[in-house]
Amino acid sequence: MPNDLIKADCGVIGAGLAGAAVALELADAGKKVALFIKNKLTEDCSSYLLAGGLTAVKIPNFTNDSFDLHVKETLAAGKGLNDEKIVKYCAEHFYSDVIEWLIKRGIKFDLQDGEFDLHREGGHSKNRIFHIKDTTGKTIMETLRNLIINHPNITIYENHMVIDLITKDKLQEKKSGNDICFGFYVYDITNDYVKTVECEATFVATGGLGKTFLYTSNPDVATGDGFAMCYRRGLPLANMEFIQFHPTVFYDPSATNETERRFLLTEALRGAGAILKLSMNSSEDFVLKYDPMGSKATRDVVSRAEDIEMRKNGLSHVWLDCTKIDKERLKNDFKNSYEFCKKHGYDITKEPVPVVYAEHYSNGGVLVGKNSETEINGCYVLGETSYTGLHGATRLASNSGPECILFAELAAKHFLSQTKSPESIKIPLWRTGSAKESRDKITVGYYWEVVRRTMNALCGMSRSKERLVAALDIIKSLEKSIKEYYWSYKVTKDFLEVRNIVEVAHVIIESALLREESRACHFREDFPKENNKYLNLTLVQKLNIGS
Ligand SMILES: Cc1cc2nc3c(=O)[nH]c(=O)nc-3n(C[C@H](O)[C@H](O)[C@H](O)COP(=O)(O)OP(=O)(O)OC[C@H]3O[C@@H](n4cnc5c(N)ncnc54)[C@H](O)[C@@H]3O)c2cc1C
Image 1 (cartoon, rainbow, N blue to C red):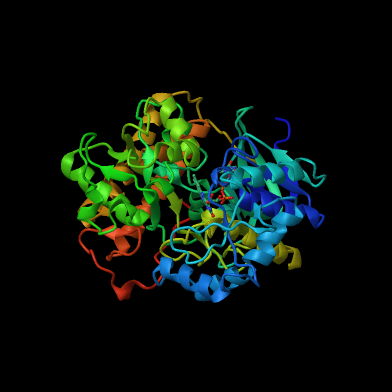
Image 2 (image 1 turned 45 degrees about the horizontal axis):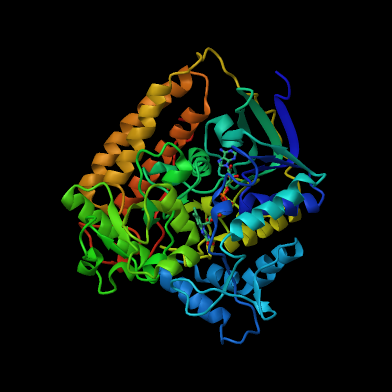
């Protein structure tokens, strides 16, 4: 087959904020970069949906804001699990190395009276969110896209799904203690065959894992591919039990379009007076039973209240009632939500709209060092797929976008300062062997359905040993079937994705079982209190990488 072997200095997997930034840094330094994207460059990623903005403290300022205050608030959100040194480093560098990095590349953040127009979000005591209207991610990704497509050192491979990393230990089927990554296998979705990529360094920046759950605000590409491929090569995954849920995603099970299924009704609606109700005609804010702030309480509290009530009453969703908010304000300040709901048959100025809590962000990820490097030489992990220590148990709003760019720069710098490893190996091309054609969408669709429903029902907002053990049994039996399927049939995108979400689901459940306490977004009904015995990271690692 043509182009079976692709050679480059660096292989970058994913082109959200993290992948795009690292690709540009490496290419600007003269490295030949091969950039792989599962779907299309630019819009198929969480970074494109990033709406609120990016946190950074600019010194001097007129609001008495300081790096120390940003550190304090990040640590408060992280509930004792952050790495304080990393938090401090981020607070001190988000403006100089992220906001200025973007400005240099043509981004114009909103200004008011000649100064940056900074927003404030939940958990922040100061206005420090840089934004471009409410389309920050879209504007940034479109600008970076132009730089990427015009860069002579970047070759773009759209519709290419990376399957697995090629490492020395995997090839030799034993742990050496000094593993090296030589590249990866990638499935060319359009032409339906697998290519081999050989490169000096691999940068995994594949984003989140939202599709592991039934409801998510994430785009379709968020099937946890990077988490799964690193786990399969023996890298430790940290704090994977800390899944952040968003309480108000539009509920419409009949929507065929995934974009419609994941529409977020902004939190600002609850801030402006919208309440959550159990039935359409009720006038009661049911969250008041759980928190004196009612529907204005934090994401974690509101989502958990929804989950408890939905379980108790057998509901598939709850209702968000915005009718107490001034009609004109709804139409103007919340234009996006108003128009979306109107299009789907709900006039939010007159009636409540069905919503459900949904997976929003993975606080945990592949454990990395201070330059996003991993235990495998030549393998870096970036963005939402990584665990840098910044977020701890829950990220402070809008800290995750800047983290993607800062660590992309650090990873590129680290790689560029390394001397080339003398060790090389002839890497085997992908072999299809006797694998049969597979077009059985029903079996694969069933696997998808089971894992996502299992995670929502048994490992969602409220967890218990009983439910987690039940979830693990289901996931283990799926893993067995999927493994057999993997060796018997030719790969397809759908199948590779479900293989990944099952693997990631397994790690999340194991992590949730290990943490016998409740902290931030991890809630155990059988251990409802925080317990300081659990101030360490939860680490889950595959020991037998030969299997
Ligand atoms: C609706 C929404 C709003 C948000 N708002 C904010 C906000 O206001 N502020 C903030 O800081 N954060 C926000 N976040 C979080 C933030 O957007 C993400 O954490 C961040 O953008 C993640 O960037 P990333 O580069 O890691 O991944 P992504 O941007 O998701 O990019 C992942 C890339 O990997 C590619 N990919 C995936 N798997 C493969 C594979 N196997 N092979 C090849 N390519 C692959 C995808 O195609 C994509 O290009 C929001 C998230 C969502 C979903």
